[in-house]
Image 1 (cartoon, rainbow, N blue to C red):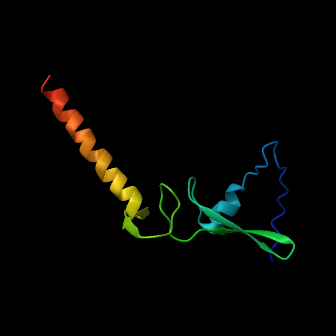
Image 2 (cartoon, one colour):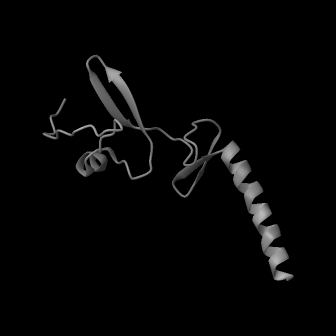
Length: 94
């Protein structure tokens, strides 16, 4: 395992910041998911596989513009979109 030379302090809420160089090397962007797991006495951080951009689910995914959305979130989005169109229509009639 390659040593990076980074030492980070855990804050009062148990958080650490993953340095930009490490995120870049992993290909992880802000707001994307990562996986944590133990390997003997180490904690390993790995870029997560495909998962829903909204809820993190890995089940029943559809791809759209390099992002993934699960069937449940897509259904909710379609429902919300329909309701928004109804509101927009009613506002035009005022």
